[in-house]
Length: 470
Image (cartoon, rainbow, N blue to C red):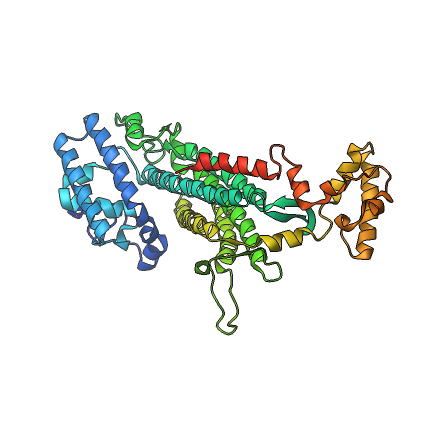
């Protein structure tokens, strides 16, 4: 005599697929394979995708009007329960999808069971992740806009503040602090471009691929795509359920955002050191010491610098996760979410706090200018001056090198030498030479596009402020 199947496939003791098996999954395996503890954050997007799927099923005659109305009503109740923290998440039901489906069946009966027609958890989860990630990209993109705006605001304020420019951490040439800040504006602008480009590939609908081969039901994938705001559908069912390129691409973009944050953090930490003393950070971004009462530690930039390694690790983990998988969907892909979720959380929270942090920077302009007077920062300007007087650049370079060595031995700067002393290094040096040896003259001369001249910095800052106005 054949056994009668359980009357309720979705009770707390049975998985949706349990009729195929002769013994239950062990508790250890349940804990090992379940994802509901972390994928429940997809609940709102799972419901959004299910409602679009139900609308399509009704439009092609698979669901009745009454079924669709019941599903909509049930999903609204579930969403209310989730938002209120009253929804019961069950480990036995493995993931967010089966937990919501079980509750829907409790609320609306057979209509809830019909909802899964024409789809699989494989294309369902791929859709949920894309919906969630699209929303995260939109939030992060707006935060990057705000960060660029904050940097450009500070850059405009300090378009004339002299700062030593470095190569190899040695004084190279004078720049303006505003120009320095605008370099980070460029980095974050590229990050925003990459996010926008990534979003286009995220915004394709996998739903309708079912488990891997598509479905025999007369579904309308384009209708679902339009309902959910996707730009189009994934064109191959095997790829649709197994593709995680979009997640890898987002993690790579996130790693670059954090790399730029980390570079900025490193400079903030150096600038805030009493040995440098270029800036101070607002107290709300710093902590003290439990033993040294004088300490003011730049904890936020330090932690952001550290969290960059965390995001880089998620990228490598996801690349490694995908490298050995045959088509189509494999359980390995359950491991895509935690690193992806943490990448989005880390990037979002870090950029948000840096928007506020930039606005709280106190600039110590005199310390910056004093540092720019060290290290012969205008030596290149003197070489350029000689070139304009007819010397080949390599000869001018050698002349200035001799002058620098002499000044170094005497403990003075090039600008401290008289015209007669400078002319001893080359007779073409004239009475106007000191105009190119001042810090202000040096930066003012570089007024081409991309240069550090105050007028150019103000123009660039205004351009960015116009682009990033909220």
